[in-house]
Length: 242
Ligand SMILES: *Cc1c(COP(=O)(O)O)cnc(C)c1O
Image (tube, rainbow, N blue to C red):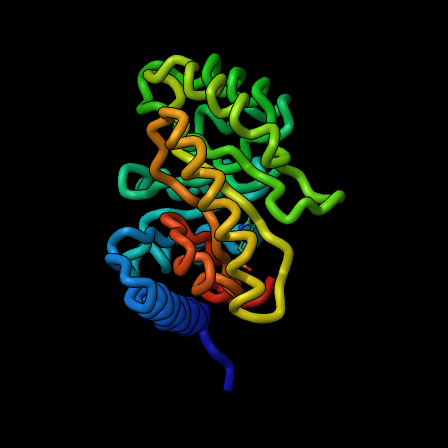
């Protein structure tokens, strides 16, 4: 059977809608199991490599927060969806080079991947005054993988203090983010997520007003919610394989 473009788009919308509901169900069940309020966990739908039509379909199914990894791709998508801009929240979750900070400071609402003080300083300098402050997380290399980006846990307290001292009308430090190594089962998945939660608690004990743990993806969101995730970043379970 030859499907028309309209049928194809409709098909994509139906599957994104049902996958979104499945992911929300997983989050709600994990919250219930952890004795947490389901409302305390927000879903960031990771739309990298998927086009603006996919984001529009997810928005049509009630999704508001979207995560992107690649600056050029993201900016094109944000522009293509400018009619929805006030209803969308864009989260930058990819590696961020200092020559790309201006574009990110102008286009996004959140940046999860601050891994150097210099990046946060540039974002603060470049955040347009007419926009709400950019919401920041520090990325932590919680599994200690040599190849992975992110701050070492031991580096985090000093940088967190410095980022928290940047002008609050431009940037606000909200918490920590990690991309743990894939682990085979629930208990193994919990360990790095627990370590990130404990690091956040240590920062709070030092007087920082933080409320965000960005952790959990398609494969490990239950373990992340169990350990206190407040933002889960889910891509393939919503949009399909990349
Ligand atoms: C791609 C990506 C995700 C989503 O991963 P899935 O396994 O597709 O859910 C989450 N966080 C970051 C930082 C990513 O790059």
